[in-house]
Length: 174
Image (cartoon, rainbow, N blue to C red; front, side):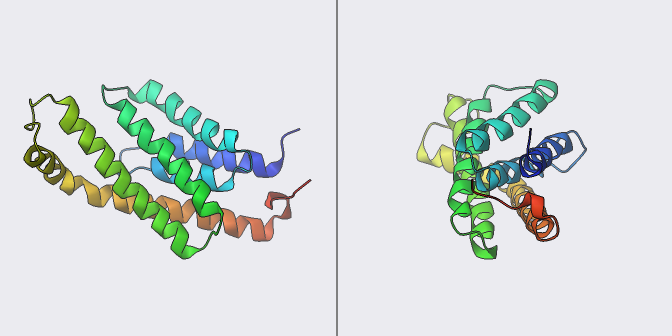
C-alpha cells in the first residue's frame, strides 16, 4: 500500500512535469524546483532521483530532445543533490539558497555545453567565446531564476503547510 506522503510528493512532481506543457516564457519552468523538492522530501534516495527523472523523461518524450540534453539532465541530477543537502536543515534561507544555486548551476552547465559542443560554430573555443556564450544567455537567466524561486516556494511552502494540517503527510520513522 502506498503511503499518502509518498503519493503526495510524487503527485507534486508529476504536476510539475505536466506544467511544462503550458505556454510560459522561455526558461520559466518548474523543472529545477521539482528536482530539488524530490531530493528534499523523499526519504528513499533512490526515489529522490528516480521519480523526478522519470517525470522529466516522460515529459521530454512529448516535448522533444536535443543534442545537449545531457547538460540539462546533469543539472537536473545536481538539483536533486541540492535538495538532499537542503533536507538536512529546511528553512527559508537554505531553500532559497538551494533554488538560487540551482539556477546558477543550470546557467553555467548548459551554456558551457552550448559553447563546448558548438565546435567554434557559435562561439570561439576560447575563454572569450565562453564569456560570449554566457553573455548571450543572460536575458534568459531572470526567467530561470524567477521560475526556480516561484516553484520552489510553492512546492516547499505548500507541502510544509499541508503537513501541518494533514498528519498523514508527516514523515514517520518505522
